[in-house]
Amino acid sequence: MEAYVLIKTSGGTARKALKAIKKMKGVKIADGTYGVYDIIAKVEGDDVAGLVVDKIRAIDGVVDTNTLIVAL
Image (cartoon, rainbow, N blue to C red; front, top):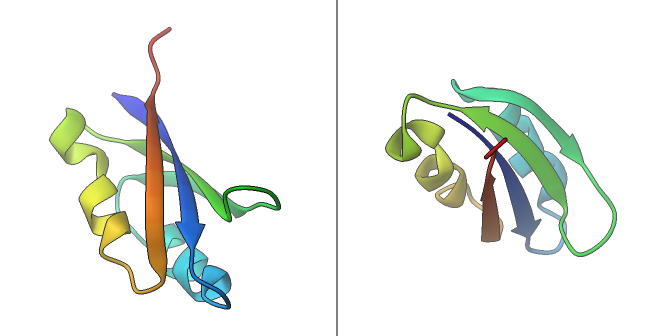
């Protein structure tokens, strides 16, 4: 199962959060963005629980996420 996670961070924490996200097992790619979200990550897992979204939410500076599960 794959998903894209759109991530908002609090002011000044995006770079540190991105560095931590890139090191996580299950994260295939993560990049900083400009716009409503600060980071986008492509994650992979055996099921919804394995998508590491809870671990991303626990990173210092992450204030909101939006998970888009790949369907097609």
